[in-house]
Image 1 (tube, rainbow, N blue to C red):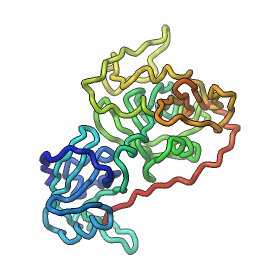
Image 2 (tube, helix red, strand yellow):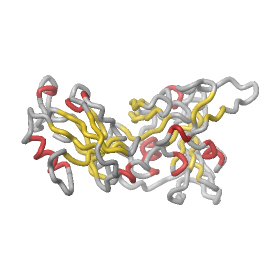
Image 3 (cartoon, helix red, strand yellow):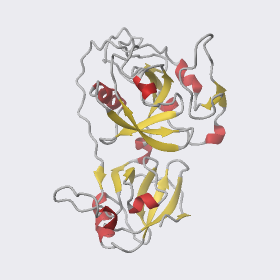
Image 4 (cartoon, rainbow, N blue to C red):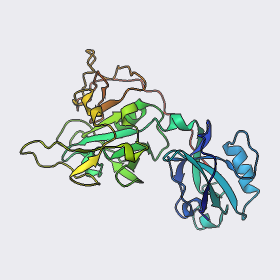
Length: 317
């Protein structure tokens, strides 16, 4: 299992986005990567629109027999074939939920447009000493938050609303490390008592300038500027002397202020508008937009009417 071969590289318009791979499952024995991989079909089957229901029917009919899944990787923009043996034996030792069948593949997926799915990442910028972000091990400029344990995040505001809903409570988020090219789970505990401003104590970038770079060869190493007489706040996971930054100018499109932000338009609070496609940077889960910066500070004297989260992630049985 897990062998893969090349096939057509055209990016799909719709696909099943892999959100999670269950440990010990058939999928865990392959090279399928959460967030970056999209299931587009099954080799040998003519399927116009693959969805969770049709995939379920096909896989259940092939339990115990090897199948070849056609997977598109957003990292390298290529298709490949991944071989897998659907089985429920791996989950026989786990206590099943009531009225639930054990998973055959061990994949959690959702149907989506891959291009849109990859836009929703939150780039970690500055990390301040003693902050919740530092305690959780977030790495400045090298880490990207791509989701959380409850599902996916579909809008820029989803992440900030999620943080505010978890004040003094653990929040499990999925973080991609560009330095090490891996995905890990990080537990954040947002709070206002850590000694600085903001709930997280880190800058967060969102938008075009803050997406995960695809081509590492096109990046230029940028030396970190050190403040005189200031100790280093955090050592990046990569080379301590210099990190690979996708676009360092992202931090120049707005002053990083703190939580009680000023968005440059005289707004105080969350009533702000975004220019889609621009890169914004946020400090301590505040934000600054390209050409007009927002930032959030510790004093939250504002109110919002957040739209309810919509997480269409489904676990495939």
